Length: 516
Image 1 (cartoon, helix red, strand yellow):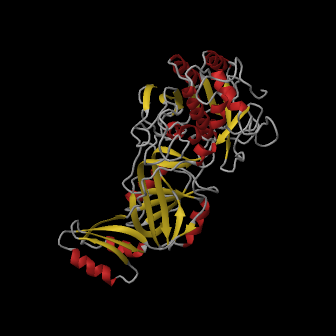
Image 2: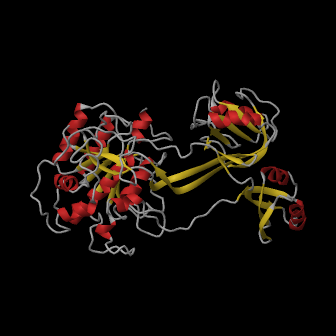
Image 3: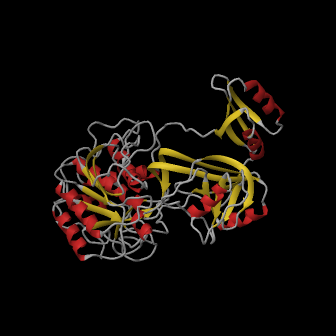
């Protein structure tokens, strides 16, 4: 529950097994001087498709069923067999949320890919992102002006949440990946309050301490894609003070899909942001209460992450959705499927892919037992409906290990002895689609930064007023619990504040907010 609150839920990417062609496309590395002999072996395989022959590096690329690949792997002339992994065009994609909030209408009116040098882009404004740190070496984040960070290690991100948030706010406008609401122009401060693979939780005092530091260092906006279900009086006082010095605090409304309040979002000094999808409909998981002030894209949001893991299981031509077991080896291995029950002790599993049931002993103990028995890979199926994630903890393995759903695992109990292939890959500096109000809050933070950059004299209250006054009314007419004032419209808010000139509204001392 703490992880769900803190990280505002990343949706599972897989829900069921899917059928796929039986053949796997692989690289075959051949011993020097053995290319002709291996070519003859490949020619004798009837159910094999040859794609490339590379004599300069002693390799072939072929597609073949798992059983054929397993036979080739045992050929003494072949050094290794690895997946022919995919590569993608390095073109920049504009996530739907960027245009839904009309960011490019402010900083790229012609939509020709060239930013107007005089446009409001976030340049000169500062956003403080309090989260799990940032993957500072990521290709789409390396060009950011990272002005400060705390504590030590703030420029790394072990779970990816903070990097995803940062990408939505400020991913660089280049020829790869994605682009942020502020196209790489805003100054970014990082406050790291979550760490470890789980990024599970932090204290309200830690959050308040870093928020104070951000405000005192001159941050215009603080983004908090995090929260919890209990209010804390002194934490509220901290954000009241931060509001009084002109910094605008923005936070996730929460992801339980209930009317419960989430904090700090539900403090009156903080903007609470709900999530909508690409049809402008409120997400089922988004919190709905009278503290919700604004809505922004939060379903299927593509942004930057430090890495992505790819895992699957192929048995008899069907590919099953899987998750890599944390700290297990990466690779692709094939072998006959064997049933190890709970895999409490080793058995004669030489070269087998061993199916283990979740329960009783730890994942590390199961994998160690299979490894000791000569197994080639481990597949752990759930002991309750659905998929799950797992870790070896401080242990590691020399063989791949994956997890699958209970439904798929029980179905495979009738497939013992059938050829199975386990594939796990790690892709660094990548992009993923996330769901959550954690993804909607940074759209508002990026928009606020662009507005601050349009006029350095603006206060947080003025920017907040502009965003609420110009929001696109959704749901019931007027302010409602699902959308608040509505979906943010950056272009309309920019015009409301004078379109880059002096504000056309009187300075606001109190921003309009929904009734708490």
